[in-house]
Amino acid sequence: MLKIEEIHVYRGRTYVLQGVSLEVQAGEIVALIGANGAGKTTLLRTVSGLLRPKTGSILFQPAHDSTQIDISHASPERIVELGISHCPEGRGIFSRLSVKENLMIGAYLRTDKDEIINDHEKVCRIFPILKDRGEQAAGSLSGGEQEMLAIGRALMSRPKLLILDEPSLGLGPIVVENLFQVLSEINSRGVTMLLVEQNAVLALELAHRAYVLEVGCVALSGKSRDLAGNEKVQIAYMGGIA
Amino acid sequence: MTGGYIAQQIANGFVLGSMYALVAIGFSMIYGIIRLINFAHGDIVMMGAFITLGLFQTLGIPFPVVAVAVLIFGGGIGILIERGTFRPIRGAPQVTGFIASLGVSIMLQNLGIMLLTAQPRNFAFPDYLQKVVKIGSVSFRTVDGVIMVGAFCLMALLMGLVYRTKIGMAMRATAENIDMARLMGININRTIMAAFAMGSALAGIAGLMWGGKFGQIDPLLGFVPGLKSFVAAVIGGVGSIPGAILGGYILGLSEVLFVGLLPPEYSAFRDAFVFLTLILILLVLPNGIFGKRIEDRP
Image (cartoon, helix red, strand yellow):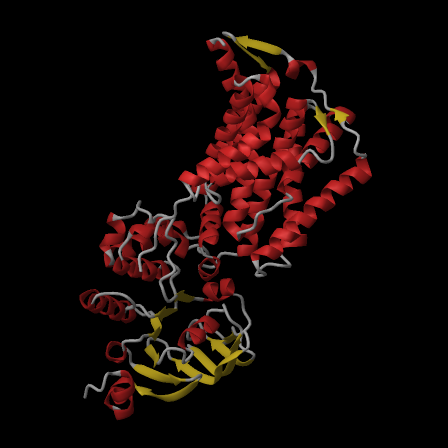
């Protein structure tokens, strides 16, 4: 579904991604782990069009039967339209808009009104709190609720590929566990995911495959199970837990 | 000093405040969406006044048609300024935009002087707009009524656009977080342009009103209403549309009451008073009246 080939990305003068290749198959959850500054967020922002690679290509195939499109120089608007939805680090909800408006703006590019209302109800079934708080300013939600809102909003665009940047950031362990349960359910309904997560233990539990990013390069990749058993990964990212 | 006199002053204050509010909205919308204090905004007021003069007095086009034309013209000028000046420098530090807007302002003023000369021109509305109407002890010219009702309707329309439509929602989202808005698929060039168009249309129509109210216009007339409306926007909390409206009325009322209620020898200090009001309000409410942001929880 997504095929990143040898991308090199600069942020200002900093050479952040130094030739990264990565692939996400339809239906998968792929996790990206690595230390701060390894370039995880940069990678996600490049996929969604907020940053441009200097060289390399990003191929996206929205459906099995559609052709691959190189999105490495497409605008963020176009990339959303093609079916990639990005939940950024820090959630990026619109705190002065109401909860319902936040969800509706997720469906900004869609014109199928009835289906949008349907999807709004679906999202509210997944996260009932978003219905109860519909008219409230989104900034008044708690951190966990804001994360739910950000994910709900991303789902409103009916993404083929959902990009999640640190969904567990700043949340309590119980909230995180529930959230990851929901993510797994959303995935089983056919949404492919690319996930950046500090909490490597959780990430490897949820994801089918994972990539380990170290200073702008892919250091390791493979099935989550195998990586979780890898000694180097355990020491570097999982607190040495066997 | 009778009750009737005070009522008269309050009415005058509302008329002046309506115009400040219309101009202040544009300041606030443009600041809200791209964090730019657009000092050329006041000059759109001037251009609106001259377009009115041209269409109405020189060409004799009927008043309602002129009003609509001035709205469209003002919006168009706003779009042109944004496309020509602010879009190319988007992403540059704030001070760049600030200086660019000063440049546009000076350019527009001098263009006005070159084309129209600095000589003030009489701006006479026809008799039916000059008629004096008395309600109780308060007397009005029809044009005052047109200003108040017109401003009210336009502000209601604008609030409807901003808070009830999809493009309005997109504008508010862009104002809050441009990157996030793009990730929603919002074309931010379009929403920024819409904010300039709406704000500038209101400034243009305020020019029509300004001319009708004071009867004389010149190419530098935009400076003072521009500056005062900026003050109004700051008082209300820059970035907030309801704040700009409230700030406009507060400023209009307090300015007129200052001149009307104090002995006449103080009236020369009316502009100083406007800024004193600003300083006092900012001392108590540093973010302006509606400038308080909802805190993001971590």
